[in-house]
Length: 460
Image (tube, rainbow, N blue to C red; front, side, top):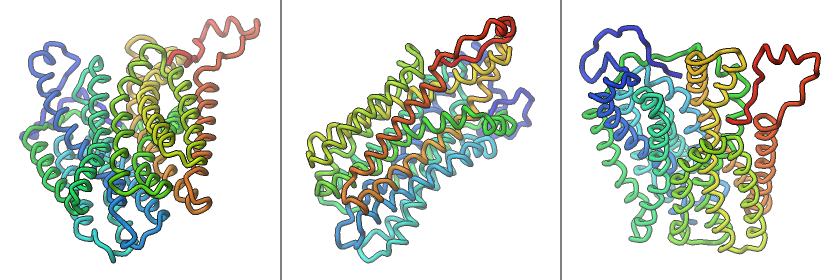
């Protein structure tokens, strides 16, 4: 939703860069790359902590025993609200980079993480009302927005030939914030520390991230919000189709990240320490494998990898259903971790599909060369923020489904049956829209077919 402008910018001094042209190889080699890598490093740090704060309550609920007076449904509601806010704020966070500057917004968004952390530190004790915990979890949702602003900011720093690597590293470094906060929670629980110890660890880290962003990051004056592209992306059907598919991959990843430990505790009677021992493994592997999904998509086609990834996700979910019904903890845990890995793989392949889809549309419009590439970049860049926001809403659906399943049948089995059906629908949509070969053209329309390129997504 942001794009570098070619118009000269008025000098604002300070940490503002008025001339930025990473596509110029001389500029890039002499000073551009060094500046871009520095900004990437500290952007990743802030985004990483943002993910940790967003998913903080997936750990906090493990500390909340019977003395807190909360039912399993209450706990799933708490984590659901954090997921909801984190998804919604991704949209304004995408525009904030151009309004405030990448460096400035990184400082602001990092500092804002102090609000949910200090609030939780203040109220985290038995006797606090459910509503208060709910409000604190909603505040933690601001951490989910850091992904959108960080991706928008880093996208402007790197040339097209380097964007895949840079954005992949940025996204992966942020996602790893999920297992890291769970690992820190494990260490705190293992050392017999309370939830305030965990919160006390993150408060100074947030301050450090904000200070480092202020000292080492830069704003690019030429980055402007392309509201026209945003409007075009909203009108484009493929934006919503890919949003739906991203619900199945990233929505599953973030939803399961919130819910995994709580399911182990509620359904299998694990203690906080026992749950924490395995909770971090799935998100860690899912984060690390995301670049592999992108690499496989490059090699074999994003739609093909996404299609068969949904088959594998459905198979893993089927095993989870069997394990849940048989109350087999080892099988349940193994299959759930495998499902986490597949969500990470799908994150990479679905996101990789987006530029190819809009490039194919450009070719179908008769555009060629740089005109086609520019059209694809404009629409794919504008759609990614919206797709990321809608996809994150899948995490809300995951946790609400678990809440209803535990209320209705006393286990997560019902929720997993619903997820299995959803992955089946995702498979059908991927095949029908992006892989099904078009019907043969009648002879009478052969000339028209040659005159206008046919829209094909088979290779995206």
